[in-house]
Length: 383
Image (cartoon, rainbow, N blue to C red; front, top):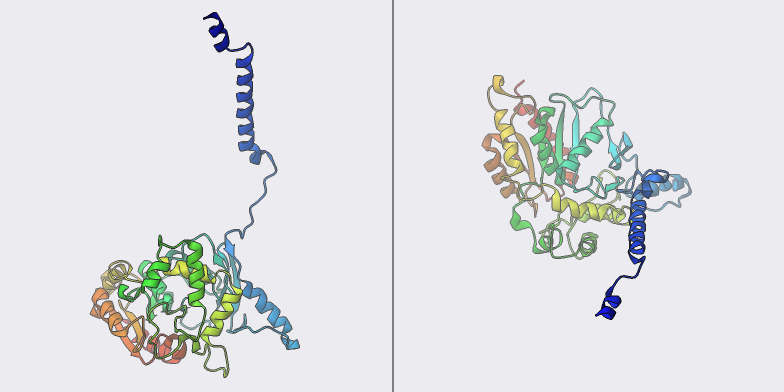
């Protein structure tokens, strides 16, 4: 027994050694934790969450090389429209155009799926591309103007495709700022039946596919091709379209000018934020089935403005939207969109118009759409 006791007894000094090792390990752990605070603080890069648009650099190089006829192809210049400017923001640099008479009525144009991450604009890499992000982009653009764009009934808003969905959201929460709302082939009331199984599988949040594969499939599917009519503005249901959206000229007044597909191809090659921005937009923006969600709130804002003047809040004084759809649009189906808009917003809440053509009317019939919008401004105006 004495021998067993000797075997299992702790040798002298071992406890102190173990305690010393534990103490050293504790202080080492504390040092590792606090070391970053002891060294010189290094600021994080301001653009760490931004995907830079390389298209801007290419456009600048193109402008410098133009005189030598050695310039790479560029669909449209940084100064293609008057008043072009690059606005540096905490979300990245965005391209903004502002033109027209300073004493004229102000109109904010929200084009199709061509905002953050497209064209010459950077892409936030860590934010969902929902209506909150796009509303922030609207205010950033307005803040860049030397003219006042805020206050009661300050400007008209006109949105095409995705821009229509964003305009509807902006009108819902900032109706007091608007004089009118015009929506052309808008997202928002697209019925879920038009969401293909490929989009449901590929783009929906929490889908079966890993994110790297989603990005790869989106890139392959969206790249312009003569074998299909899918485009960044018509993700589904366009195979039977009468007009290939990618073949539509961007500017009809420029003979031989770039077509939509050429611009998209250019973005694939020069803006690394293009595909991630597109995928996040399809997932998060109010494009599909907003009948009982966002558009129901918009209905409330319009209805209260159709009351007597004494009870009417500021902005959107006509209490209705101008809705312009295309008779052969394969995704924003004219009859469905008008029917659903009137069902949600009320008969008196919608001034509907059908224009010949497909989803491309926002590009191909600009003058006709502008005339319809301006007539709608005055037709129902109360003062």
